[in-house]
Image 1: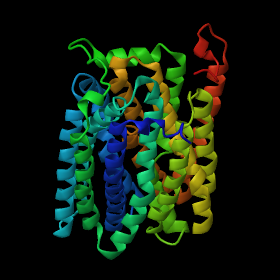
Image 2: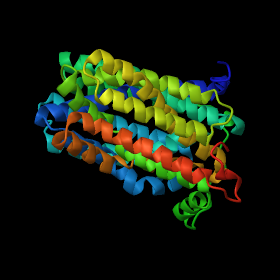
Image 3: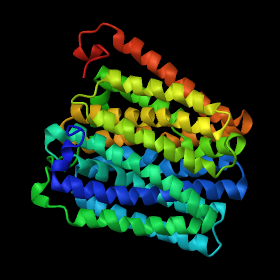
Length: 406
């Protein structure tokens, strides 16, 4: 296990991960409360899907450009600015909800603001993670970052479920605003002399086009991103699919937070399993997606809450292993001055696909059935894995042709 946590020998990494853990517990308080608030206001999964879409639409539109911005600027400063703005957004939403003025249009408007801020915060924060450790530990650091992010979901959704039923959604938003103090404090006390900043991207040129060309020129990365887009669009829409499933099959929409928390415990295991690997391969990446697909089918037709919690564990392992592997592989493959852009492209594929996948999943849940809101994405995931195996198994002159290569 010492290999799993080897990045934590760096003081900056320990401090930053502690701050981001506290902050992301608050973030999941807000995400869970927003989904429950909109669902209770309208009773429709489609409206929850629209809420999720608005949160990630700016990532789809601006994410790649925001990555180029992060590659050309001091990421620590950029993270401080965006984290501060996110705290203001959370407090504003909480105060409006506390005043009884949280209508669906108001929630949607503030959700769009949240999405705009996240489009720039994501590449800045994730790019900063690569500066906390020496280059040979970057893969481990990015995996631990995912472990921290997913580990926070163990507590955030469960805590949100308790708070929503006792004190209301407004306090979830206000507590999220308060949680940003932790990450801002960690950013302010980082030792600059112990950071490992990459060279800044030269001004001018076509930074986004350069990053896209880098990906499309390598078959392994092209396959990775195609699969990432398909799986993220169709399968990773839990804030949309799970409230409807919980309401229909597991005793009420409030159990959504409990199932998500158990899935998050699995996510922590999946992230740590990836962190212990010296080299994350495409074989591991595709195996995690296959696990995600199979367990998603099991969860979709779980007849009771107990069985749902059992299936939620491998679902979390597969989901976290999938995104952790994608991040690790791209960071190992890319040049130092392109890290922000590659991280942004991963975020665009993973999060930016949500404006399409969220409403689509809500529509499937409302029109076809709650089970299919989760199951259709699982089927797409398994098909994507099969297609990737076929494409990567074809002989070619490039060493990336084999599925087991780095």
